[in-house]
Structure formats: C-alpha cells, structure tokens
Length: 438
Ligand code: 5AD
Ligand code: SF4
Image (cartoon, rainbow, N blue to C red; front, side):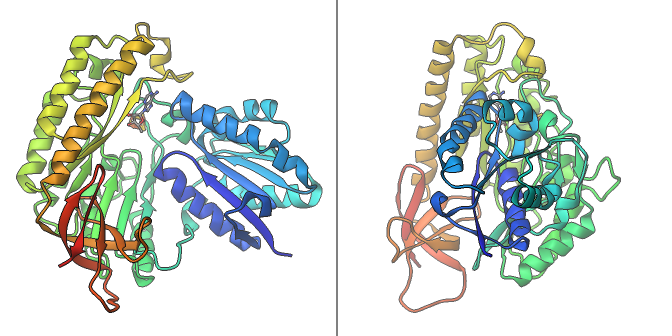
C-alpha cells in the first residue's frame, strides 16, 4: 500500500539536509512525499530551537496538528530535529498524541520507529546523543533537475558560544572522512549537480580532531572534481578562518566570491562575554585579507543585539562594523536566552524596548547597504546558474550569481541546456536583481 508523508522543515540548512535524508529513508519504506497535509498518513516536523521564537513556532505547529491526528485512525505524527533533541519529554507532555520523537543523532533509527508506529501502534522516543553518523551514508533525496545541493562535511559544535544551544542539541564536533565527501560530490556531479554548498557548524575546524586533511585541502580536492563549477561553504568561524583558506579565494576559480562570516557583535567586550575568541580588529583584518584576494567578494553576517551587558556604546560599535564592511546582507536577531547556556544566567540583557530599537536600526542600515550593493550591479553582465522558472513570471528564469545575488531574467528564445547564463542586469529590487540574457 502506498503511504504518504508531509514533511515540514524549520530552521537552518542542517535541518534541510537532514530532511532530504529522512525523505530518502521514507522512500525506502514506500512513502511518497505530498504537499497537502490532508492527504498524508505521516506528518513529520523537523524542528529548530535556536531562539525562543523558533521553539514557540514549533509548539504551535504541533498544537495545530492535533485535529489532523485525531481525524483518521492510523495517522502518524513524528517530531524530529533540534527541539525534539532538546525537549523530547516536554513535547510528549504537551502533545501526548505525538507518536514519534527523534533527535538529531537518531535519524538512522527512524524506519524502525515508523514500522513500530504503523504495525504495533507503539509510541517511541529516541533522543540519545549517540554520536551515530550512519545517516551520512544516506544520500539526501535530490529533486529532479537540481543544479545545486548541500553536502554535509561535519556535524556538531564544541565552541559553546555563551548564547548558543547548538552544542547541546547537535553534540560534539565530528568530521566526515574526506574520501566519503569526495565520492558523494562525484556522484552528485554525475547527476548534473554543478554547485555544492559544504555544510558544517564550523567548517574551518574540519578534520582537526580526526587528523583528516585540512579544510583548505578538502576545498582543493573538491575543486578538482570535473563537472563541479561552484563551491560554497557555511559556516565559517571568524576565529578559525585561516590564511591558506583565505588564500584560496585568489587561487581557486570555482570558489564562489561570497563568505558568510558571522560577527555577532562589534564590541570587544561583548565578543569576549560571548566567548567568540576574536576581537573586532582580527575580524576586520580577515575581511580585508579576503577583499585583497577577491575585490568583488560579497560578505554576509549574523548579528545579535541586546546580549547581556550590551550598552548603547557597545551597540554603536556593531554599527561601525557594518559601516566598515558594508555587508551584502545580514541576519539580525534579538538575544534570546536559552536554558542551559552560559548566557542564560548572565544579568543585564537589554530591555525589550532597547533591543527592538537596536534591531530596527540595524535592519534599516542593512537595507540601505543591500540596496547600494544591488544598484551597483546595474549595467554589469553577470554569470547566473539557473535553478528554476521565476516564481512571479514563469516565462522568465531564476538563478544566482557567484556572489549569491538572486537574479530573475528573460532568456533568449530557443532552448539552451546550459544552466549557466550571462545576464545583463537592468534593475535592482529590494533583495534581487532583474535583467535579460546577454
Ligand atoms: N539568541 C539570538 N540569536 C542567536 N543565534 C544563536 N543563538 C542565539 C540566541 N540565543 C543566532 C546567531 C547565530 C545564528 C544562527 O543565530 O547569530 O549565528
Ligand atoms: Fe553556536 Fe558558536 Fe557553535 Fe556557531 S560556533 S553553532 S554560534 S556555539
């Protein structure tokens, strides 16, 4: 009997890749993916708990599925990912109708849990931090015609930044053997993939614990793979981004000119309290070094405002960094205390009013910088890797430049199988460019 699954992914790219693996596993059990919940026999939420808002969102999504679950006998509700890992018992207490709770280290056990729920109506919880990496062998399901995809190179984090729950929900750092990564990317290139995004919580410490090759060597080896034309990576820790890796930006054509380099705050006092392990000067010197390698390089970052002890003066330093770097885009968040982290017991978080005010000022300045960056590209011809038809106008195409700008454009008549196109930029929107094939 064909059974149907509806999957919803919250949070970051790590979860997206995990959902791809889960879909592969479920395919093996005979499940077809559907986009309408009412058709589903199984609903699976892959959850996030990075900030309180993210956790709330998941709890309300679970609450909203109570009716779905009760509507027909035999329906299965499974909750996985970071919130499940962190608060499995709480989920069961708040929503006893949930059948399966599985953590970030228990993906490989999911088929057995689902079989138990299907046949014996048995509920199960599996949230042990096992260090299990069997899921790495499961290739995330790749939608037909994909030209780009993500590849996990490591999992977990041991930095314990004072505000961050990731080390508690993803566990200690483990790097994947380079040989496996290379084979996976080779196989992807044979399926038509041209761009890979390498994923890890801290890619610059790749392989250090295991005595694997260094991250910059891994990048070189990936760059040697025929058929792969673009390489990106996230996330770089500014402390660990080293000279050889910076040097590659002047050396490897396939390395895209875009770096996501989360600074979090511009004040050394706050960076120290966060336990980030770098000063603003060190951070800015790495930005300069990268720009020296690739003057056209794009930068993006993450900011937290209102961290315990942050004064208006500290915040002004964050603004100064923004002015100095002029990021192409950024993600800005209000500090959210997470139970169990070092910062949760620190006093002096900014009042909600001050945090809001700082957030608004950051967003306004970033909008201005983003607009200036995009406008600066008008009249230039850029190379775009085409991903799909434009969402607003299906007669046009959508893709991204090497520096990660979203571009919608009209193509030349006739069908061209090459997913790389040269596009003349004619207009800049708030977050994307538009143009025509050159
Ligand atoms: N509060 C606010 N923002 C946070 N981030 C991580 N933990 C917290 C928290 N407790 C942000 C950081 C990180 C991004 C993924 O989420 O900026 O880089
Ligand atoms: Fe969290 Fe810091 Fe690890 Fe990033 S490096 S995942 S912010 S603990």
